[in-house]
Image (cartoon, rainbow, N blue to C red; front, top):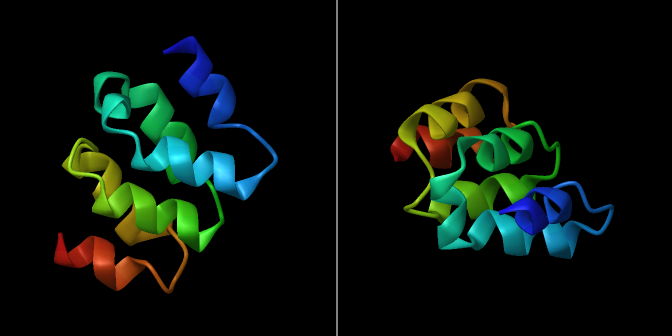
Length: 76
């Protein structure tokens, strides 16, 4: 889990998207919360599509996430 948290803060968006898509992030709310604050729409989209991410994290994306991803988050 420590590695996932480190990768969640990686400067490369592809790495953060991979973490956001990983089903194991559902075990650690702190990882999802770190990624919820990411401004990149691809990261937010990957979180919303990941069924392991809590609904509270999805609700935060609907509130503060990139505008283009908010409707997708609201739909979940």
